[in-house]
Image (cartoon, rainbow, N blue to C red; front, side, top):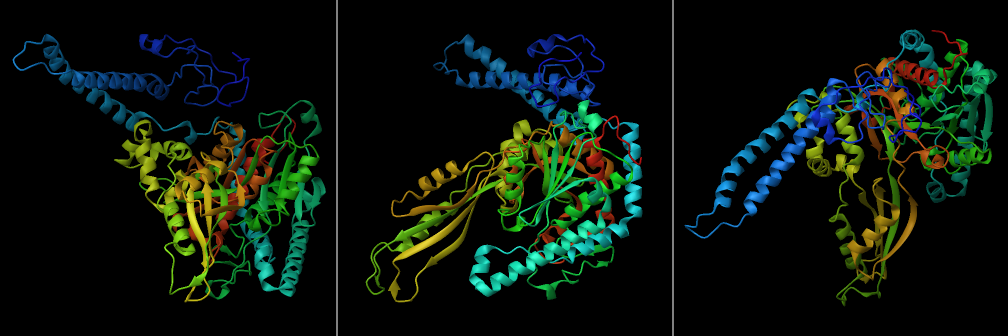
Length: 631
């Protein structure tokens, strides 16, 4: 049974269902028109809705698709009956009204039925529904892939000290990016010295990469963009390319992975336990700036490709490894120039993998497993300058409205008027984790169809989680006045919004003007980037990430998430319709403060597993009939 039309949910066209079994549809199934009674078991072991209205024949599938929807319909009908009963106008006292008597008899029964249906739905979902499909890989691994992953983990762990030494050497290259405004404030001489230092350190890092990965440089095409950014192109096996083997379900379309060579500064090295630029291996960790942001990804991808080349693997489609050199200051000279170069060559990619969130234990309250957060969306931002002008004067004769007072009222209104919450990605994330919560949280999370507004309200109540469900407002700069007895002629404030994918730059600015509602406040946009598209969780690349997590970090559960920081992926939106942001590093929630903070480090074993993860991912995405690998 090969479906000629592309499925509606983004799954691969022409999905083969094995086997296609006609089912006896129960009478209640007529409530769901469009189902063609075919059991699609070729995509997952637990049944898969391929978008053509097929009936999932598995027990969880029947429960989700038939029993619980029926129970919800009964519940809703019962609630309507209760509402109608209460809406009946009571007759005059002493009047004999058979209608009222009838409803008096119906209401208790309807209430009992509604209550029973609600209990069945809530408890049934909590006990029997296994969570959303995000929790399992989209397709079971074959024996060869399982064996290859196991062998790769063993080999990477055996080589972990070599990997650690190479990453440590990269950390010793002090590739610190400096913001142009910061440099200009330090004077011309300091700016020239900082640029020269960065150039020298990037040159050292380029040479280190060339020496450390001889097979990569012998087999891959290497392009240098704007002096310091790098593009490595792993060309497809020509035979498999002619046969249309892409290894990723999208013909010969290439895919891209991205990481960045630069790091932020470490202004207080004396507060670190280990010198931030030493790259020292100590106490089972590799220490230094860039250990988890983002040199580990640069060197990790190269280690993975080097290992695949060593085993004789040839890809079934082109792979682009792109490394920018100024992500920490916006990527304007690195990633943006790389994207422009690729666009000039007419390139299009099936998907892109960039840095993102990690595998974090203890990040979700009441959840028993580490969560691998694969970011499918990224927040945008807009920074505005608010200005109020007024007549200057002496403080002894203040007017009724001053520049400072007017602006203070405006920014206060913004702070006291938070943006509305959107469940969206947050609902998908917590729904994906539904099977791992402790009671009573399991009851809540298994029934987000009812409790999603409550969840959004709960998340919005705390600053650390509010960023996930809504556009945030941060007042970052306020300037006015120069002398205690002089009324200033103007006051300025800078406001930074991080925009949820459900909003836009235009809608945020429109809302700010409405909330401020003062013609004396002038608003100027300093910078803006729209939020990203939300990538599909049914795409084969997402399924590959799930499968790799299951193979390399078997205790973790995968969930879609929202990246609230800014990455270089924004420069590639026109080149890749699907962008996933993920950092395959296992951490505890207490360790996440290392990002741009003190004592940045990565475990030696943890880094070896990252290399194994990237190797598994590249092999899955590039395997084809003619390729060989060191299995």
